[in-house]
Length: 88
Picture 1: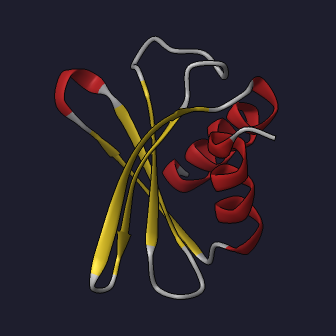
Picture 2: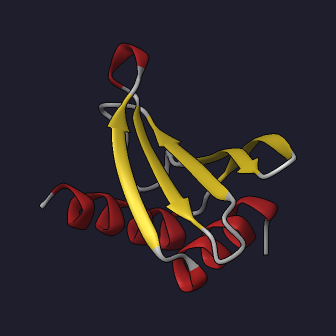
Picture 3: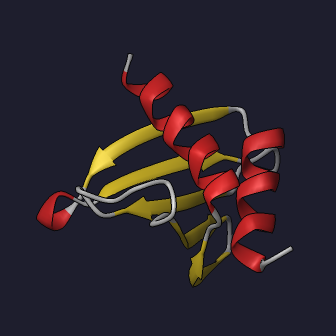
């Protein structure tokens, strides 16, 4: 499993809260709060598909990481569903 998929799997299976924001140039930004309080971010271009998601920033108390890891279609589909659910 790729790092991006691992980050998506962890966030989607253990996360407790999601929020969606539209970033610069219409980029869709999904934030998922993890059990330890860290927030994992994922991004997709405005006209992107389920294959265009990427794992990006991890905001953690006292530290953080920046990723630019691709997400496969399987987890991209799940991120798209989480995004839609957060908007309703």
